Amino acid sequence: MFTLVIGGAASGKSEYAESLLCQSPAKERYYIATMCPFDQECEERILKHRAARAGRNFTTIERYLDLSGLRLPKGCHVLLECMSNLVANEVFDPMGAGNATVKRVLEGVERLAEQARELVVVSNEVFSDGEDYDPSSLYYLEQLGKVNQGMAQMADRVVEVVYTIPVIHKGGVL
Amino acid sequence: MRMVIGGRAQGKLAYLLRNTGMGFFQVCDGGTCPLDQLPEAPVVYNLHLLIRRLMEVGRDPADFITQLVEQNPDLCIVTDEVGCGVVPVDPFQRQWRETTGRICCRLAQQAQRVDRVYAGVPVTIKLERVEP
Image (cartoon, rainbow over all chains, first blue to last red; front, side, top):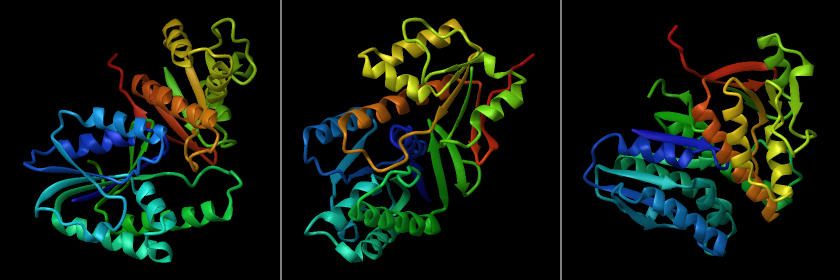
């Protein structure tokens, strides 16, 4: 089962995604962390998320690039957070996939979905704010939008989290 | 307590007033109301702006809003759904989005009803049935 969870900033999407993955019993739970800690604010954010996960028996794997190269034990439960960071890394990091980001990231998600029994991917709603963005931000938005659409096609369920409330867009009642 | 949320200029307040039969005179605008006292109106509009104004003067918005809801458990809150754009470069803007989001998460958990208005069309995303 592949569930895509999307929400805005501070919408409760992480808490929801974690609780979703912890509903069913699993021997092995993996948390794929995609945020590269490049400043103190990132580090604090990472610590906050780690504290929230503590006691839930997750093995954390840091993966900032190249999702398709990741191998996990067959049948495991996996939470990937957050797709917005992974796409930003692939687009902007010199080591990243650059113009091939959408294709490469979607291949990676497909590999994950094949390996995992339960897969939850968290992505970010960043498309509904009428700011004047610079061309590189607009390019990034375009890539993330395409990745979200591709994942939604693959996913069994698509859930938007609105201030902690799940709004189902695909896949019926949970 | 009930919440009406949605993007900017989607008809949130108009929907709430239509739905409840209340009028504009019962609305406190969080964008302009005095900050030295708790609003007593049954509707608090622009909660996201109220939060920002409280932060700008160094007050704790979470505390203020907790008191507000305690004072009036039947309060109707109308707020823009912020936090659905690219992370802002300005640290205060980031902090404001984060604070607004967390406060709204808590309010939505407490609320008996949450409606989301999209292009004027309300969708009820949470409704707790109250036993008579």
